Figure 1 (cartoon, rainbow, N blue to C red):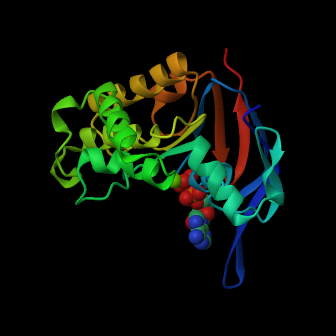
Figure 2 (figure 1 turned 135 degrees about the vertical axis):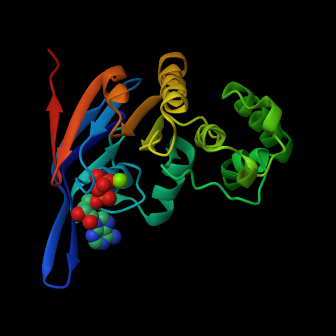
Length: 226
Ligand SMILES: Nc1ncnc2c1ncn2[C@@H]1O[C@H](COP(=O)(O)OP(=O)(O)O)[C@@H](O)[C@H]1O
Ligand SMILES: [Mg+2]
């Protein structure tokens, strides 16, 4: 198992009210699978991805990453696991607008202290792999939304993650570009054995996935296909 959660719970307190954003979620994610998490807005998808990605800590329950109980780790150790093993793709891309496509992809490698020459080679190779050979020196604000999402995927792959967490990666894209992104993620999963977990409203993502979950009010259920 690459990720296992046990009764994972994240509660938010807003004044007198309590929101169970993620409510006792127990799931197992196997290596090399393509997993989708569907559910309406506010159902807890983003919160769950941030817990699995060790960006946030649960109110109760546990996340095991490669069978290691991450609740026992320090902030620094969790950051190290995240940097070496997990790539994030956000709905709004989160690129740095004034950096070029190349520089955006190099950034996580710089954080992982990869030598600059290797960073450059790898960034070029990744941007080629996502079909952006002609856009290396474009600043991200000069790119189309589809191109930005490709840069974001290349960046997520920079440190050869075992796991990609994608939060509504097609949400801001037109239908055709969205479909290209889905195919790209699927290809990564099939050829590089990368585990991909996608939170999505996009029915095509759910269709393409090996394992489907649905969330509602913080609760998760596994959909068993016909
Ligand atoms: N930082 C926060 N503080 C308070 N409530 C939050 C916070 N983040 C999310 N929530 C609430 O938690 C619930 C789940 O949110 P979220 O995980 O963003 O859902 P989704 O990604 O499925 O739209 C929502 O009701 C949302 O309002
Ligand atoms: Mg969300």
